[in-house]
Length: 297
Image (cartoon, rainbow, N blue to C red):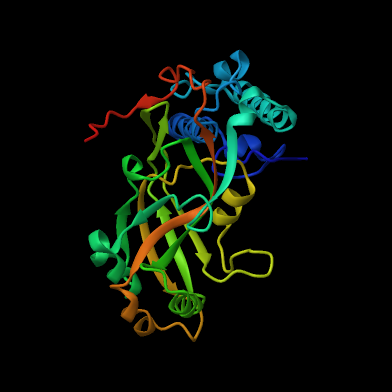
């Protein structure tokens, strides 16, 4: 039997046979593993109100700094799995406020936009094959009415401003010859009820192609991309990113992209979920998450 613990410990599915080996709580490795599992769970369930009952709160919070013998830890993991599975088939009051959406210019706006007038140097480097480190600032996104935004599909879009559909199609076709490396550097930032929170995690390097098949699936792609897309949501798009374009086939040529470096913005796009503003944003989350103090202008 396979336990689809998509939030524990590293986006992996665990079987009865290997569960103890994967999460063996010995010495410092056990401590690190426990902290990682808890961090991933907090990210995954970030700020979803009534899906935390007393049982799950006791299980998932407050024990990351403790050590357990294998039998006790196995019991906890199995109980975690049971709660996660139950949550998948149970309707909650908060479900009516939990919205799934596409985050791009054709739908609800991208997760974030790095405009050329400010980020021309970074855009130029990307289109010339260089790696850039760039910050998606949660305080500067357009989604004022959306709380606790998380993604399970992520990518970038070079978009002409002002809009030019003909040139956009040419650029998109050129980019189909490239693949994308996006490294989420670990710190996820969330907004909830006009406050900001941070959840620290390890980094994840997501690799996918620009080209999609008839089902909308990107190729090539690594397993991190696939498991995030097919699993429970865990990460915020608002973080520090390392991004790089890489050659995918023989038709890929960075010299064909250079001419676009002054005329396109860079958009952070994808698929995700959020909690819409409502009268129910009253959960006291400070007991579970670290508030991130930001001095807004």
